[in-house]
Image (cartoon, rainbow over all chains, first blue to last red; front, side):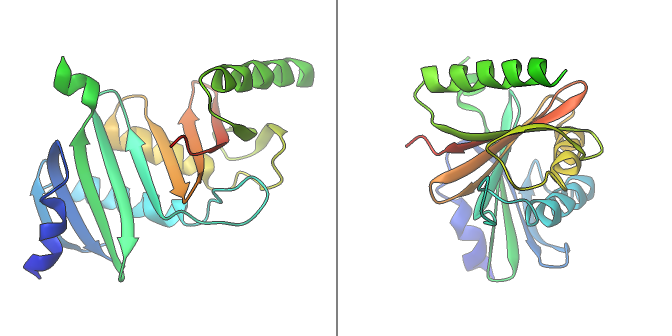
Length: 97
Length: 92
């Protein structure tokens, strides 16, 4: 199980991460996203929504990864092997300021 | 009304093109997910508005959602009255 968590070791400016299973239950969490059930629920709902949105304007093509960015942080979300991986990273501009 | 939308969409596409990003289509829908205007897009907005709303509640600030698949990406942002989706080629 700890090998799953190691994928986040090399993510630069990572302030928190979250791993959920396909039903939205939290398997691992750390940092800003640790024990944050609200964020986990929202992100799970977003993944279900995003799975139905096509990435291409004319063909049906679902996402491989998606990001949610505001001016301070970026949530990078991807799915693999029946799990949802979320990394919360600081935006470059706020790190340099 | 449609012409105003078209003019806005065209000016948005021009801004993207100026920074070297190729825009393949633009879709504007309201907060309920009903389409208001579109250019070169044949897919209906569906859960786009819901996704933008969830993103805004996750962060509390204005957010941009970017869905990516290889070279294709769609940028979704919620404004005061509408949700805009821009389909582009990923700038590598």
